[in-house]
Image (cartoon, rainbow, N blue to C red; front, side, top):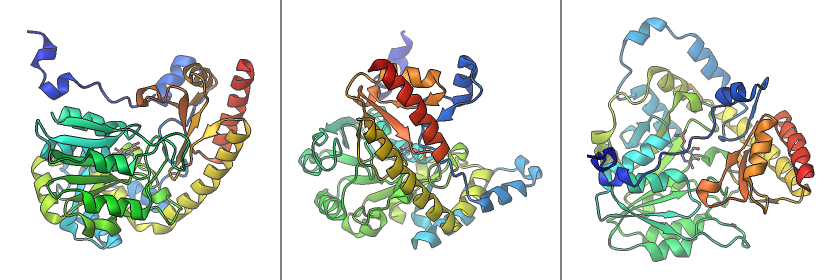
Length: 374
Ligand SMILES: Cc1ncc(COP(=O)(O)O)c(C=O)c1O
């Protein structure tokens, strides 16, 4: 029997998530001295100094022990920070794991999973992998205030008695677009209680527009709201793989049945606890990112490119011509950008907002590349 047929029906329809380039591998392949990595929305500011100190003081003797499966101290720190019950928190090996875990736990064949066109890629993969029926809602037009963002009216129309799960990233990756407070509140109030709603706030800490709501402030509007966040972005801990979900304690107790017992390692738990407590560091990162994002967007627009509005640590750039040759040419110059063909945006590239010297290196290379094509 063909190995494809041995896979579960949902898995047969899946293609693996594209994680982007590994900078060291590509650097060696190209024989370059260094790479400017602007393809994965990481955080050039790094983690809090208190995280560094805590990791330095780790005792390697502890490596023989399993980590605390309940991550008690970290869950208490998160609970205190957001004023929620520790029992409402589920920890994941990155929020990616949680997004998939939620579908695996709640979605059965025949259940519909609603998400946006140009929404975060994991939503579709989780929907398909769990055997559910993906319902992709057409994005807003390019011309409006939230170009190619998720369409609230389209989401409302997509709801049906079969809807089991709705995914929305706010702000969204890769478009950078967002839903305002009234829009999200209005939608949440419409979702039937037979469905769950996941608001993916991986980029929440970068938000600097008051109109973008903290979804935790809207938990009263839907009983099965799950807010996911991550330590990979503003907290600068992508390598340690840790994220969290906040839901009702009853919903979290169901997720606990399917969560892998030791999915979050000792160092991730420790680092995340110190990261959560360093509010000032996150504030510095937010402020630095907002300044650099504005500056970078201005510079890119000055090159005649269409830059989408963004509340994240990245901007989507439309070159209005196939972007693959531009991506390749940038790579040869040592700059990693994220191709968007897989998102149905073949004329776009996504650019992480780096530190100023990284953005300058990006712009220098891009000017050369664009001049070659002019
Ligand atoms: C919108 C969104 N959600 C979730 C994730 C997953 O992040 P992680 O698994 O590192 O927490 C990402 C990563 O880029 C993202 O862009």
